[in-house]
Length: 216
Image (cartoon, rainbow, N blue to C red):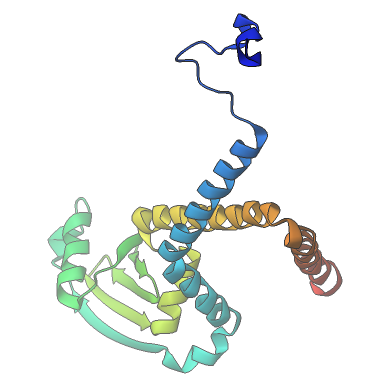
């Protein structure tokens, strides 16, 4: 009789029962998923990384682009009936938009006893209005700060509205996942794991030392 026939019957695995995953299988699965996420999210966020890298430089050297700023003033008048007995705020704002080509959001509508202060702001743009409540006459000071200022405000999310704010949150999340999956992949490269982790730690320490030593 062969040896295979002498094995205990209870050693056979029940039909349909999945084999338990080993640590090696889980590691390979984690590495595969991390590699997939890292590659494709890196491609998706490539333009974002480039944009934030370039605007980080322009933010740090905003004086380079100061000559791009342009300011001009215009005058106008709204019907006095819009000012009393109650302020027709909507009509005043729409009048300013229509007659002066203002497309950005309203950021302030200040009411004083003698005048109104109205401000429109957007990326790299502002329009400030001072309106006399007695006559309905107003002055508009419009400032256009150039393409670099537009990009800088988009980088900071200043005067960009809720949609762009959400876009910034999603972008930050994408770049965080790309960074994390890069670390996971480095962990599975046994020959380069230690060198990679040391380099990562050195970069983080370098940022901290620059802050501690040179930032006032």
